[in-house]
Amino acid sequence: MKIHEYQAKEIFRKFNIPTPKGKVAFSKEEAVAAAKELGKFPMVVKAQVHAGGRGKAGGVKLVKSMDELENVVSSMLGMKLVTHQTGPEGKIVRKLLIEEGLNIEKEYYVAVVMDRSSEKIVLMLSEAGGMDIEEVAEKSPEKIIKVFVDPLIGVSAYHLRQAAFGLGLEKDLQKSLMGILKGLYTIFVDLDCSLVEINPLVLTKEKNLIALDAKINFDDNGLFRHKDILELRDIEEEDPLEVEASKYGLNYIKLDGNVGNIVNGAGLAMATMDLIKRAGAEPANFLDVGGGASAEMVENGFRILLSDKNVKAIFINIFGGILRCDVLAEGVVAAAKKVGVHVPVVVRMEGTNAEKGREILLSSGLDLRTAKDLKEAAKMIAQLAKE
Image 1: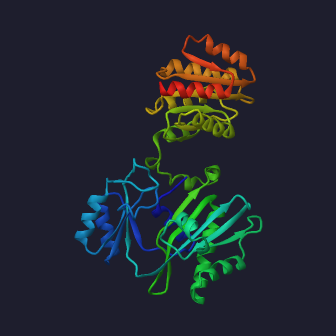
Image 2: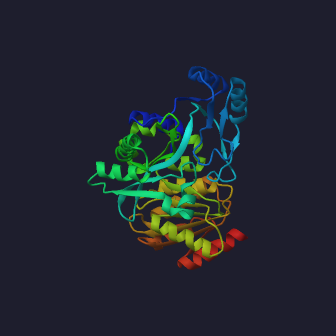
Image 3: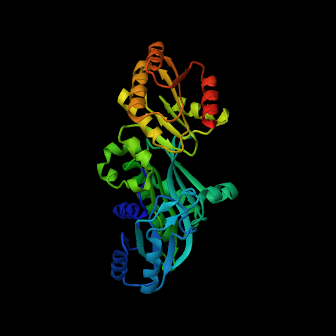
């Protein structure tokens, strides 16, 4: 789960990580009131959307007067912001962060992430702050400092010193950076995060280190432990179909293709998507109904796929283990009768009660095609999607 910059900064402040003074605004009137409360120009107006690259896309503006602020706020609220992370469809700006301007001397990149290959938490730092870290990693990997921390032992002073020394800061600033890193690590572990990032962390001319930006992503699997964090979710920033799927416990991610698919098991779902591509079509989604899915869950998954206007055909690929094939078939038939099928559907099922499941499909009176061979089924669905 992602949250907005202003929400991440509120969390930062609770863990003693310095941030600029600022206030969120949902209207022009609130933005003007926030500016009056801050009281001193220049200020920065920042679009609050779940995407990086806002500055390059016109979503971050420096203003030097109240008139300029009002003009920027009027043009930014309601605009469609298109960045390299939003895709061409962009995101609508519904809220702004009004923030004090800072005298910036230098910018750094600081983050805490999980490194799955080493099974450790990584403190990641770079002098190339303000840039896309992926670009830095590709073109100048020597500029990235990585300090690995065993999560079973936790972060120690030597980890923090090693990270701080790498940026070549003055002694007093090294101490400040160590405090910031300790706060970021604590947030990462205590709040079950997948990413905690400051880009950029700025050094001001007054010799202070301040988190100019803030990004926190949470591991969805840990949210049951953090009801207060769950309340920060902004469903307006999420795809409507993904929001709908989450209501029924479905693991659904929308993609740009034309073949909708329902699969039980994440690994099988990934393999199915690969087969669809190899057959010459494009998957429209990732949808794992899980091993213990009920007929109702399958029905809801089917309904969500049918509501996607890009879906030209549906491929259902089930290996019946915990989820019996007859249960799956009942869910598909119920959904098809309730919602109405307007695209071709191919069902491939093997495993527990597979024959019974195929009988249910064949006797339903619906145009539901079956296939035993996975490769054959993928070719069939790709051809149907093209037609």
